[in-house]
Image (cartoon, rainbow, N blue to C red; front, side, top):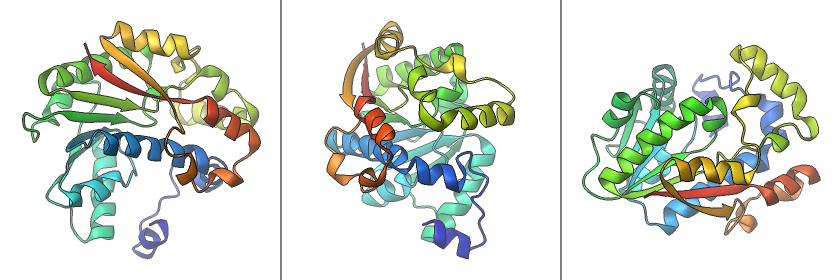
Amino acid sequence: MVAALRERGLDLSSSPWGEAGAATYAAFMEARFKSVNHILEEHRARQVLELAAGLSPRGMDFAPRGVVYVEADLPESIERKREIVTAVLGAVPANLHLCAASVVDREQFLACAAVFDKRPVAITTEGLLRYLTFDEKQRLSANVRELLARFGGIWVTTDVHLRKHMHAHRRAARLAAETERLGRDLDPNYFDDLDHAQTFFEEGGFAVESRPLLDGIRERVISLPTAPPELIDELNERRTFVLTAI
């Protein structure tokens, strides 16, 4: 897909990962993407709200299959995504809705759900929560819980980012670069450990099913065999949370 976009004059070099970082952590990004896909397919999701969708191609895959798929992101990202979808598919599919919104803003968040009918909704976050303070995480969680209480469904998140993982092996330089780029330190946004993460969501009104990130997908992560050993160790520890409102 990247090659096709470059042929159409779309420059993706401004991605916060950069090409070198994407190559180093390819297995991480592939695993979390396929983990979410696996759970959506397992639950036969027919309505999906992907938060901070960014460059994710999931909507372009699911919408043509009849899934009502909403991508929510900030206005600049949504406009960029519209260009990408049009470049790849020729037009935005009828079932793919691109919604400009701040997902921590209740009214904007709920407006993105206007296209859903009274069937369960699967909400996904994949890389978002590490950029949110705990106050912002709580606001987002309240928005998600309100939506799930209205429609039923699940919240699938691979965003169980532990501080020890973010400070492990070769990430120090990248973390410093992110701090400089964003103008704020992300370190306070990480969970202390898995118990901390689970307690956070439980206190937000969710039942938590904690799954190994690689559960059901290990053989399908094609970049896993070439991943650095320390990254494989991390992926074996990482979890995907499947959350339901209680």
